[in-house]
Length: 279
Image 1 (cartoon, helix red, strand yellow):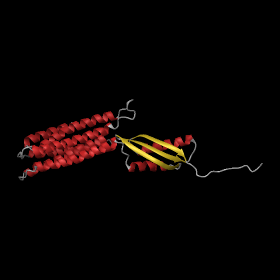
Image 2: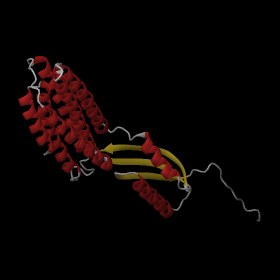
Image 3: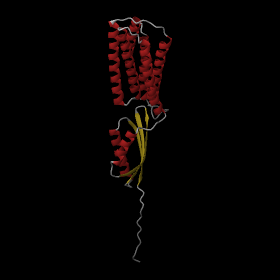
Image 4: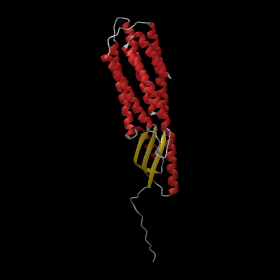
């Protein structure tokens, strides 16, 4: 709804002012409507589990992020097309243009910050990607404001500003696509998270060594596997220890979907032999 409102304001101002950059930004906001609807649908699908997908559809969020990145770059292409093929149009100076674009800047910035906050709290790649998308939109709005202000002193910087908007858009869109593809290809979890898990495991005195630890992301959720050696041989105690470790990891790191810890007893390097001495 916010993106529809922003599109309406921009499009009306573009028709009134004659700005190529503003018109391109209006269609960029129309693409935002599609992107937000796609993110919304992805968030709903990502929480579903089916017999065919027993591990969940979490990666739908990453797929959605990649689609959003493509929408961002396509919006940049539309702006570039308008810059290099559109005619030179004189801008209509009016305080209404300035007030309208300032209102759009405030709305888009507030929306981007709110969405980024929720995306960080929930570790949702879809929301985070969309918040970056909206932030790029806000940057484009700032450049539009600069164009409108410069026109008051006789400088028509409409096309130059549009080119700068395109550069911003391509960089952010490329980053969103790159981050999504990494997760879709099961890139490892970041070293900070893996080291944090390793510290939690080694914090337990019965654990002798963490032999290996791996992890991957799927949407906002994390899957972790570890192979450890422990200083106990009773199966019931070993199982209880691993349960405690898993609970501590889940309590420390958000959005853990599954933890698999394989434990083995310590392999002793010395042996004790006893012989009877009394016949």
